[in-house]
Length: 386
Image (cartoon, rainbow, N blue to C red; front, side, top):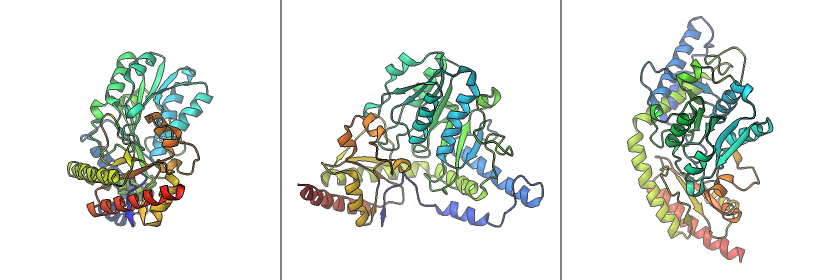
C-alpha cells in the first residue's frame, strides 16, 4: 500500500507510540490526589510543556494550552467560546474566509442563524484579498478567524498581516487561526502572529487520534474573552471539562516535541518529494492547482482531465494507493468543495480534483509508482468515458 493522504491523518510515530505504551500503567485519574493521580497529572504537565515548546513558547510561558478531543473541538471552543463571551454584542461582525475547514464554516453558519453578521473574504488563487478585508474591518468586528494553511490547496494565508491590521483597527478584536494543517509544516512564530487563539491537532503530526489543543494568549484569559464550550468538573483550567485523555495527551506531547526538533530536515525532504511528485503528476497527464503565493510543502491539489475525483479515487484505491478528494471531515458530503470554488475552480473542475498529501515517510519510489498508476488511470478512464 502507498499512503499519500497525510492531510487526513498520519501514521503514529515511534516516539509517540513508545510514550503511550510507557503511560499505560498510569491509570490514575489526574484529578485524584493520591500518588497515581499525581503521577498522571505530572505526565499531562509534561505533555502540555512539549506542545508549548513545539509552538515556540519558552519555559514559563504565559499562554494556556488547553487539550481538546481534536482540531474540530479546538476550533469550536475558539469560535463559540470567544463570540458567546461577548453575547451582549450579538449582531456584530465576524470576518473569516470562503475556504475554511467545515469545523469553522459550519460554526459560522450557526452564528449567522444566531444573528451575527459573517463576512467571508475571497481567496482566489489561494491568496487573501487584503483590500476586501480593509473595507470590512472596523470596531464592530468581534472575531477574525482565518486558517493558516488551506487543507485542500496547500495555500498559506498571510494571517500575520491580517491579524496585525485587525488589532490596529480594533484592539479588542479576538483573532483565531485554524493551524491544523500548518502546524509543524510551515514556520509559525506565535509571538509575532498576533493570533489570540491557535487550533492544532495531534493526528496530523504523527500523534494519536482523539486529541487536539487550543493555544490561548494570556490577554484572552486575563480579560475573560473566552468561555468554556464543555462544562463539568473544571478540568483544563476550567475551559474544557471532562476526564483527561492521558494516553492521547502524552502521545501528542511526544510527537510535538519530535516534530519541532526535526522541523527543518523534514521540511526540506517534503519540498524535495513535492517537486518530484508534481513532475510525475504532470507527466501522467494531470495539472497542479498551484497557489499564487506561499505554499505548504506537503499538499498537492491535482486537476484531472474530465474525470470525476471519486472515479479516480476508486481506481487508485484498487491499485493500493491512498489519496483523497479533499477534507476527510467532509468526504461523505455530496457538495462541491467550497475551498476549491473559492480558489477559483468551476464546480466541474472542483469535482475533478484530488489531493495528494505527503509526509517524510514517503519515498521517491512510491511517488514514481503513483505517477505511473495515475497515468494509466487517466488513459483508461478517459477512454472509458468516451
